[in-house]
Structures are given as structure tokens and as C-alpha cells.
Length: 204
Image (cartoon, rainbow, N blue to C red; front, side, top):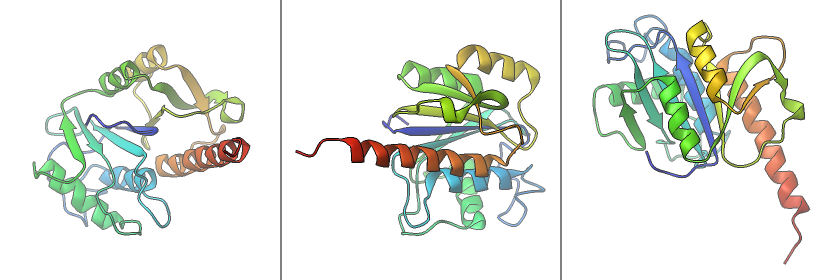
């Protein structure tokens, strides 16, 4: 998906299935916790009353039967509202079934491969870990990628690879939060920064 966006969220899903073997009602069970993916993509791609057209969400799935599978997603629901978890699950199903779903792309790649591709495009890569540097001391401008783990976290070897490739390891605090909540908080920080920059900009 060769589209320039300001913000990218990459979710490493340890158990999300790589085939359409679930329903909208069984995201958490038959989907291998695809409910975590669904909630994260809603947080990434939709504000309270509008789609976030400046954002890309990438879910890298490592569940059965054929991992890994990276799903690249942009806002697909153009209505001025957030999709429900079931609607998000239905969209993920369409993508996994191979339908030509709006604003989506599927690639056979690992999390580290997605990160390296984004880095080559000029994005600054931030790995989100509890032991990272406090985000309050990090200056975040345009062109940010945030790499998050799911409810399990990163496997040790994956985390080591990501730490060597990322520009910064940053933290929202010492407590472990849901990926979807982390994404919402990161959006809030970036939104406030953009508002501040617009306020500071001299009028013409």
C-alpha cells in the first residue's frame, strides 16, 4: 500500500489466525484473539466522529494455518462514526477471504520486514515497551511508526530484532496496557502536538 500517511501502527499478533476460520461472533475464540486486532484497528483508524485518513494500521498475524500474514488497512467505513467490533471483524474476514476489500492489502511478511520497509520510506520507528524511555520526553513529529505487541507481547527473538532496528524504545508507563488503549493515547498525544504546532505557526 504505497500511500503517504503521518502515522502508522504495527501490531504483532501472536495468535491471530491467518485464514477466515472464524465469524464476527467468534473473534476471541476461533479467531485466535482477533478481537484484539479488531479493537486495535478501530482505535487506529477511527476518531470519535471521523475516519483517520492520515493513519495506516498493520496487523502481522502469526496464528494458524500459514503464518506470518501482514494485513495493511486504511479506513474503509466512510460514515462519520466508528465501526463496531463486529463490523471490524467482518472486514477482517473479507480481507482474509481474498475479497478486494476497500483500502486493504495483504503481504506475506514478518513484523521486522514490515518495519524495515517503513524505515526505508523515511519513517521514524518507535518500539513500545514498558521499560522504554518515557514518552513525555520524546518529540514526536510527522512520519511516526509505533510497533506494539498484543496481549502476549513480543517473543524474545522478535523483540531483540525490533530493538536493533527501531530508532527508539518508548514507554507509556510501567503498567501494561491493552494495545487498543495505547493506540488511543498515542493519537491523543500526536493530536495535541499538531494543535500546538498550528497555534504556534505564524499567520499569513
